[in-house]
Image (cartoon, helix red, strand yellow):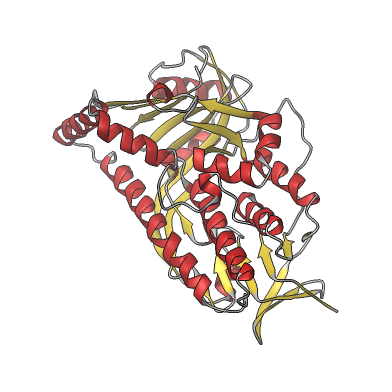
Length: 406
């Protein structure tokens, strides 16, 4: 028995679930497959060590599909300021929501909260069916579509299959789509920390010799840290006793939030620059980390993935509404043109910034400092960068501009 749908989304994380929500709202018969059901209940005393800095554009997408209210109820921390400085010079940048029409620049949200809120919406969409556990064994081309076979013998068919299964996407490999990129030889060390001073609804980031250290405000007053270190250093820091690690963290922070009082579980994730050679194939598309992986120093990975989801959903819904078949290729090519260039530009910018701050040269540090301070005192340029960081651009999908596409 083969189950059929109009679109099959593989991967129920933030991006895949958002795509399934948007398609479901648009009346597209959608199957969402994942290896496991997401965490929906948890110990409120423990924080998720993986968080995302969601932009205003991402907020609009999540609000448009109905998930934002649940995210706020479960715990979203607005950040009103962003302060960035060079630990080896006097370079400094300050972005303030007071310079915009918004009451905040964005929100820091635990990944589990976003995913849980999205699945809460999926539960109420009659056009979406979520199937877990679902382990994909192989993908086959059929007339006007693709067939997925699971390890338990089930099979599913649709005119379009979307891979939202992460950086090491199995479906991308099954489709024969290669990737280009390189490892950074850096890890992102993440944890939740209690600091002496309040975070002041501010995202703090200090550039250090091995990479940036960020303190991101959480709704309960704690901070989520993302510390970019060489892989060797990060693995060493994972083994340190809490007091030794907190001492190193306080030193690296420059004391900006006072003493480091308490640390939760730590983990480290390898960082890489990677992009798929193409985003689409016959009856097939990539979104999120399956299509691109970028350095986390500006926290844009999740936001880029949500923009992918919104753009692809809009292309699918418009195609169905016009009466054209979802087995066609034109709307997929439009999606790829829409998102690939934007993602590559963002990735290249993050890569350049990371390499710039890795240069250990006094003269180069002075140049960096001059550049940062010049930007900080040039209102028009700072406003442009601020709006770009908030996701406020003209070429956005309808959902990201607060307009539904169904």
